[in-house]
Image (cartoon, rainbow, N blue to C red; front, side, top):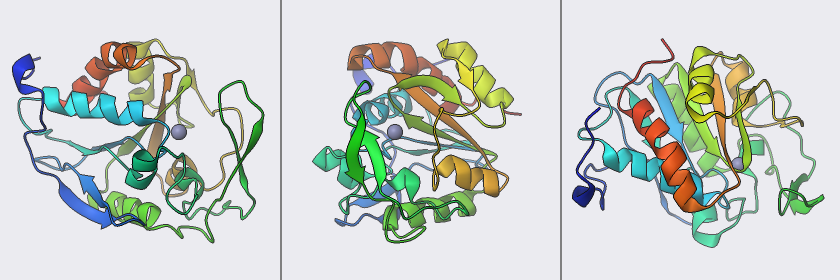
Length: 234
Ligand SMILES: [Zn+2]
């Protein structure tokens, strides 16, 4: 596979489209594919997981031309990334805010670190799909109608796909991360659940807990191969 020369990877050479606006007024940006969208890859829906944005951006910058079939969202929660919070500017965990049948109004209990108790309180929103970032991502998925969405997260170190699709198996094989049918706890209002209700494959790609350079070394090549048009999901 041909990649852009290293000297040229400092900037993203293509302009994104704006698919919405965050609570704080930041643009929600998508790099659209040249042809029919088969896959959306998004990062940064949890603002504390900035390594997902760094890795996906680096993969995008390696390409010698825009992706033919993958749409790329580098920051699904720009307010959280700017402020360093898991939730958006309303304190909402966006991955509990999707308009699913199982959406719950209960507080979202979150671990501050992987080995800490679940004692940090976030909100699932005032109702299903209450947040502009959630609604915009739903609209984008409905407009592009991909066969699958890959959602980047950290640091649970697994590839989670309720359907155990070939796409998820391909990512698991490339990364060595275990392929699992769920993350081991209930996630009402998650994108994965919303996808399941709409016949959409959602693969949750959870990086391991590691340093940024290791993420770049281990995950950027896999992401670049996905964006460049390897077609493991067909
Ligand atoms: Zn996450």
